[in-house]
Length: 337
Image (cartoon, helix red, strand yellow):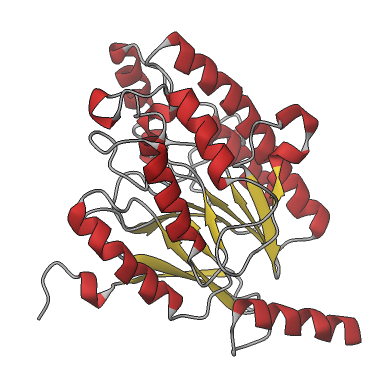
């Protein structure tokens, strides 16, 4: 009993919560700082987040516009300093805008893989989060087979296992050049291995839920029963295979095998939503083909031109574990009274 009491006291201190034991909240942001107005809004967004007692903040990537802002070191260092100024532990996972799209002339004509390497050097230095208060992270790079993939991380608070996985927009960097396709294949293999390890770790630890953060919207709707054939035909016509074709079925497989709440939180398409868009396939369960996977919830964060955030409440006493609420930053409203 004494050990359990110490555990919950430590958790309450970490999460800054005063409610029921084990209940805590965290913030989700992303797809910000795309132009001068958005740059001015970001400090107000962070001020709003910093006023709330939170366990941590997650930025799901895209900290710049993809087609015309420079991808240089000066911007990277500026963003890192802003993230490090967070009152709360701050976890970041890369977006496509800060590396896959950096080949464009208006972004500086950088080599995308070189920019990715630089992101890893600057933002994923050790086993700690960013922020004024740090959170210890386990990284996929701890495994000698995946030393490159420092951005894939996991951590635990209370009964939930949290993890980042490096899946990005721009078709996950597949289908532009042979060199980028090679990068995709290597990272995709690492991501699929990391996905399995996330759920294996959750099972080992007796976790009650899993939350996964990534940048890309993998277009779950393309895998709906009614649109699956259309999606495949579209890909065939454009001769561009989907960069998510292996990831989405693998995720569905793990969610079904897990059988407890799973949240995937992402950005990319700049449309706040909370829904359940993942379905079973015949390979997973022939008897239940095309049925919705009820344990799965998708959350997409507010993105540019909006500059707001999502508050997620974790409550072990709630069977659903997670509750999601968008938080509108009054100072950043487009139309203010």
